[in-house]
Length: 41
Image (cartoon, rainbow, N blue to C red; front, side, top):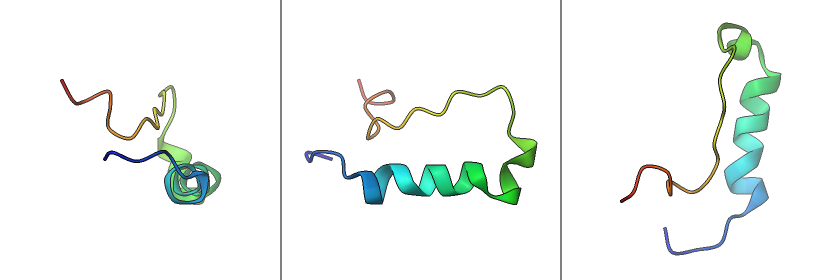
């Protein structure tokens, strides 16, 4: 990505998802918002 994280673009959608009704099937998970660093070698 080669950029610093922007809370409004990167973290706000995750929070909106977790606060919404679609997250009722989402339990016992850790949500990592790290700009894909965890999947890149």
